[in-house]
Length: 159
Length: 159
Image (cartoon, rainbow over all chains, first blue to last red; front, side):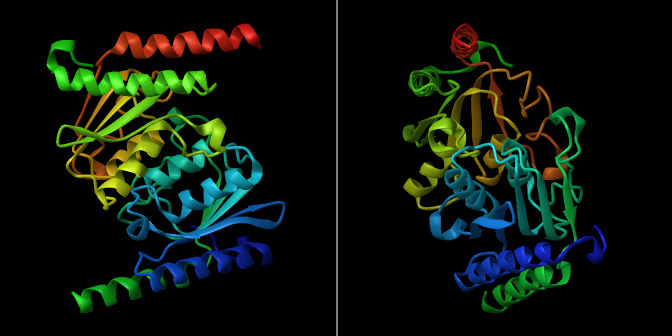
């Protein structure tokens, strides 16, 4: 986790777009996580979590956004792209970030239950998987975590 | 890796279907890996690798087949399903198998470069990720490996 001042105005603006995707996911009844992929300072793909809606085990926000970015760029190798995501990626998404050869991942809140960028396991730095994947956590951490806490509190109330 | 006699006639027939998907992938110029998902003794989804064709970093055979199985079953939780795949899954696919709550994964050849069921890392047994994911490797190992060796030998010739 890095202090907020590490990030610049562009980072904040892209994370705001990811947060908007997370909010839209919550409105659809999905666990509120959102992601955007940027290339050359522009957003090329964005998505919220759609796992329930699509009955798709791989429909986390990151993977939908990375798949869309591949289509836009015309290459599954997204070596010049950055992913912004509101929550520390799970092992599936962390490994997909590696597969996509992303330049950088910037994430919001820690996931102490399933985070794969250091919280539970570290698939970014594990030397057996090759060179480390660059990532920075903690951008808009409080807002990203609050969205999740509010969603799960509401779920508990209605169950 | 288990001896061949561990597997039964159904296992062999489902792996043959996965191998057919791998062969079709090779014919499309994709790294020849194939997968099928079964439920109650029937194939509910099948795919070969389509990463180049779809410019999709997540378009490994396993993930396409698991996404399709989710749509068919109407649930991203595939707790009663088995995945057959010709190659030991990579970290992305191994973690997706966990996310899908698969009952069992049966795989063909070891992947010494990227295998995540024990060859390079072990995402099936890592206790930090929860209860272990059941899997058995080595079914039709020689055929599965040969397909890959032939594909890469041909690629080297033409480059």
